[in-house]
Length: 257
Image (cartoon, rainbow, N blue to C red; front, side):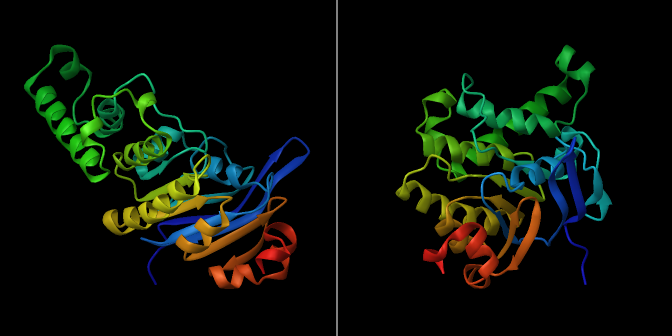
């Protein structure tokens, strides 16, 4: 059996006397599409924050490609192959659409401080490569005609697409999506559902998402983890989760059964 690309091992997060996440486990293989759901305050975003290095777990360990990343800085974790988006879109809104992608590409630029100061041949060749790759990402996401617009002037749905494109420009193995449908209307959510599937298939990466929109979760996820009060209460395929009494009681409601 192959090693999971991302493995979360019994992580716990305590803030003083409050246990936000308690003994949570998760395993994701390459190209998996997995969801984490639960009521408000269940600990979902705290789990994301531990995986991405914003918080260091009080207990437990997190492995990416078989290596522990617990306690590492967010920038290091991104370098190792995890990228994320946020519930509240965090674009550089006063930069152009293209420059938002170029900044992500610079994360893997192959030149140092000397080359950037003196504008060496290496610097110019790398900058050319980054710009070309960035334009390709915009073409893939249908944003190439808006590359000179300021990011803040894009419609909301396109801002979300740009944020996902920027995350992918770091060339991750695992993409974490935090409430990607937040603020979207039903038509935008439908387009997002198709986009998430397409991104997974196009880039052959694992996707882990937090989402409150149950239709999106049930339509797009192949495996779902359910947390309540920081604890894992259910795990399974969408149909299993929909019919799980603990899930119905804690989150979905009887009308979803």
